Amino acid sequence: MDFRGPGRELAFCLAGLPFALVNPVVFVVVAAAVGGRGDPSAVHIVAAAGCAGLLVVLLVWTGAARWLGAVQRRLAARLLRVRVAEPGHRAGWRVIAYQVVKLPLGLFELYAVYFWVGGVVNLSYPLVWGAFRNHPPGAAMSPMPVYTPFGMFGEGTFQVATLAGTFAAAAAGAAMLLAAPWVTRAVTSADAWLIRALLGPGRLAQRVHDLELSRAAAVDDSAALLRRLERDLHDGAQIRLATLAMNLGMAREKLDNSDVVAARELVDAALRGAKEALGELRGLVRGIHPPVLDNGLADALASLVADRAIPVELTVGIPVRPTPAIETIAYFCAAELLANAAKHSFANTVAVRAAGHRDVLLLSVDDDGLGGADPARGTGLSGLAQRVAVVDGRLTIASPPGGPTKITVELPLRA
Image (cartoon, rainbow, N blue to C red; front, side, top):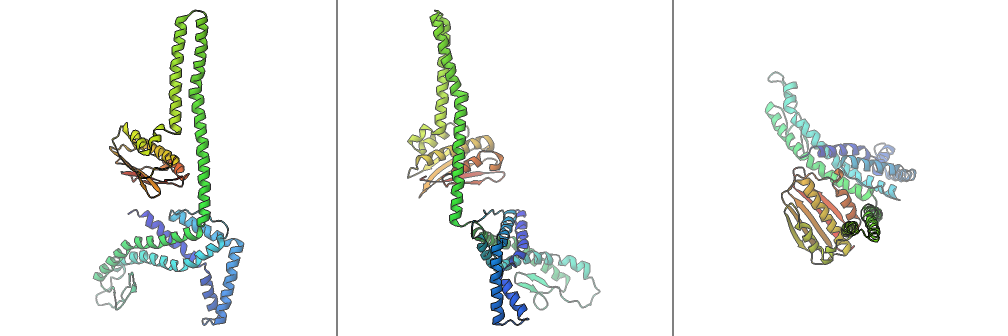
C-alpha cells in the first residue's frame, strides 16, 4: 500500500475537524446551553435557533459561506486528489447544507484519527514500560489504559500492569494501525462524495459546463485540423503542383525550340511531381476520413493492425454499426494507441478489442509492455481524451509502472 495516500487522508480528517464546528447545529446547542446556564429551556432553544438562522443568512449574504466551501474544495483537491468545479448561484446555501451534514461525518473522521493515535500509543507501551515503569518489585502502580476500536479500557477490562501485558497492548495497537487506513479511506470517501454533491455544481450546471468544454475542444480541434491541412497543402501538394506547372511550361518552350530530349526530361519530372502530389493529397484525405471506414469499423481495424511490427490480436463484436463520426474517432484512437504501443511500450504483444454494449462502443488496446503511460508526458493521450470528450466519451488509462497497460475508450454509438 502507498502510505502517502493514507497520510493525506489522515491530514484531511485533522484539517476538517475545525470546519465541522462551523455549524448551525453547534451554534444552537452552545447558545442554548450558555443562555440557560447549563439548564436550557424551550425559550432559550428557540432564541438560539433564531440566532443560528440569522447567522446562516449572514454567512450566505456576505459570501463567507462561499469562501468556506472554496477552502473545503481546496483541501479535497490537495489531500484527497478530488477536484470539484466551483458551483454557480445558490452555492452559499449548499455550503450550509454541507456543514450541517459534516457534523456527524466529522465525528466519524475523529474516530478515524482515534485509530491512528490509539494504535501508536498502544504500540509504544513496551518502550514506555521499560523507560518509566522500572520500579522496585512489589510497588503498586495504576494500570495503563489500552485503546481498542470500542474505546479506552482500563482497570477491570483490559489493563496493562505487567511487562507481558504491554506486549498484548502492542499487538492491539498494531491491529488498529493496520485497520486505520481502511477506516480513514471509508470516511474520507463519504466526505468526498458529499463535497462533489453539495460543494460542486449541480447536475444541470455540470452538464452545461461539460458541454461548454466539449464545444471549446471541438472548435480547437477543428481549428487545429484546418491549420494542419493548410500547412500540408502549402508545404506539400501546392509546391509540387507549382513545380509541375513550371516544368510543363519549360517543356513547351523546349518543344518550340525542337529540343525534344530536354522537353522529355522536364515532362518526366512533371510526371513524378504529379504522382507525388497525388500521393500527398490521398494521404490528406485519409487523415480526414479513411476510405476503408466506408466498409465499417471492423474492416478498418483489420486493415489497421495488418501491417504492424508487433503482433496484434484483434477482436471485434459490434452488433449495431456506430455513426460515421464515432467510427472515425474510434479508428483514429486505435491508430494513435497502436503507434504509442509500438513507440513507447516495448511490448511483445498487443490486443485490440472493440465491442458494442447497448448504446456504448468500447474500444480497448492492451499491451504487455513497460507501462507508465501518462497523458502529461506528451504521448498523445491528452489529445485523444479531448477528442473523445467532444462526443461525451471517456478515456480510461490503467498503466502501472512495469506494465501491463490497458487503455479503454468509451464512446456513444450515436453522436
